[in-house]
Image (cartoon, rainbow, N blue to C red; front, side, top):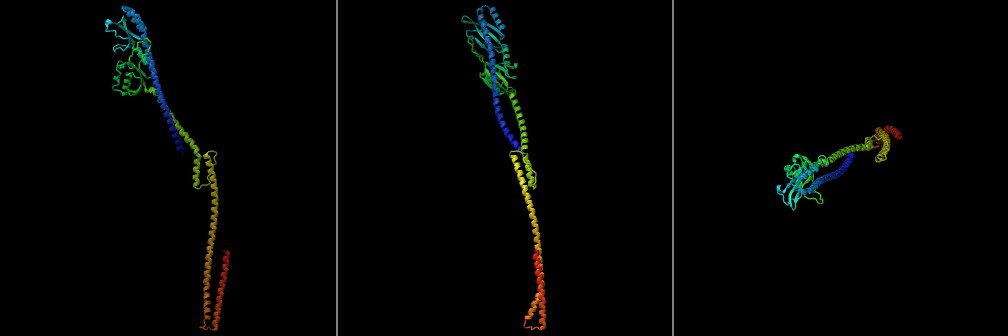
Length: 439
């Protein structure tokens, strides 16, 4: 009973605990996921802001040199000096190239803004182009290259978790920033053709300029890809141009839910250990609480077997079990008293029965004595009575005419036989009085 009661309690508590843990962990997992998404978004936002500040700084530095250089377009040495000065004074600029109209097909359609360089242009992530005017005509362009290594370091340092990393894609899908240098200048779609379809969906979402996240699998492990397009901030006087970049944070699922899963395992272990400990505690507690009932059960069994003098002690407990034990003690004492009285009554009845049996046997013996006595007396009285009857018949028979001598003889015979019968009757009366006195 103690085990069943304990198991019932544990099952009920385990059910409530499992439901509570499921609710807690479902909402906790959702909160962890939302926090990771928020951290990734903040990381991307801060990183893009940092890159945009670099581009804005390059724009301003290039603009300052540009306006100084416009008054010296006829002096190539001065122009080259300004270009070198721009590269030397800005840590973000790797090269400044001046191309004149005589050396290129530049026309009036040359615009001012950011352009994506060719793949063959080493260590350049983007180029800021400024047309050089002489009057109404464009006589050349100034291309200012931004350091790919610098921007890569900025992006690769942006890690919301130890094992996460950033990547940057051009509009055509070319990977320009990635921790794996073998993947640089390759199209991201080439890596997902034979891979997990979810990675292809994430890549296409990035190239289409979407903002969001996808769950993907890389090398058999689960990752979350958080992505958003690069949008420069609007500043007065700034040449706004869309580079079409898309930045993403590759976030391992273990980094997001690793602590959560470990907490879940620890919580399950603690819950199981707690339930086992609670089971043992409940069983011990219920075992102690039911101990009086087990004693009562043993006492009831011995009483049922006939041991009505089974000793029982009153309980000091005030609960139902204690009251039951006290009432059982009272019942046992009352039963012992009643059984004692019944045993005494049974002994008395047995004694009376034996006395009645002896009396009955005496009565039977007396009855047999009476019957034998009467039979004997009757048997002894038959002969005298027969003789008397025969003698009387002879005397009364007129045809025979007995003599006086015969008459005297018959009278004497009748008298002697009568006396014998009288003696027998007196003996019968005497014996009957004795039997009556003894009986």
